Length: 273
Image (cartoon, rainbow, N blue to C red; front, side, top):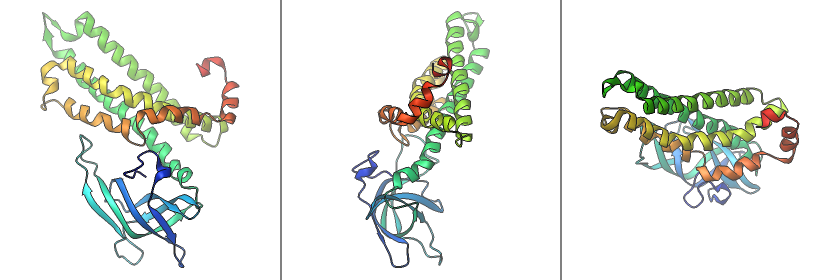
């Protein structure tokens, strides 16, 4: 989706798509972020005559030739290095329309909603791993005549970290149930409203959480012998991926459409809280 001039503002995308006599489209333009470039195919947004549309763009064409997708370079990222990201140019690349022309954002967000949920799950998993490392260290580290975990302030800190994780786990399982039951109008509204909220809140909380885990270990937590530096470098990507944090505040409100708000108001007050 992402282009140099627009970022999350995909309506400003300049990649063009022209329909051929054979029924497929030719794409000309660029993408500033093109994740997992070795994939067999990508979903790509491009401007068609009727507006921004979604296209299925394979790496190899039906006759076995390479499609007109050219990798310009791989990104030098802070973390997430095992997952390649690239910049690409489309030189009359062949693409097949997904849905209708002008319906690209809605089509690609059918995938995007799940990947945003995945960002929240990924951040939560990294936080759980950081907590496990910190807890193990506190259980066996001796300080001032006691195991570190027996020191009152450390017990309080680890307890607060554990409670935060348990709350997130319950929330994410509830959200997963909503995604599994999207045929139900209430569950669909729940998923639409709380997926951006989960991504914003959990991904944003991950960076200071891992930093706190580092402090439990002390100096060794800041060294590469510990895995915490890798987790710390990995954390920011989920806050940025699929839309940066502040992009999600209006998305939460947009998710609560008029019909969603009416359904929401019918729920018990305890659930709404």
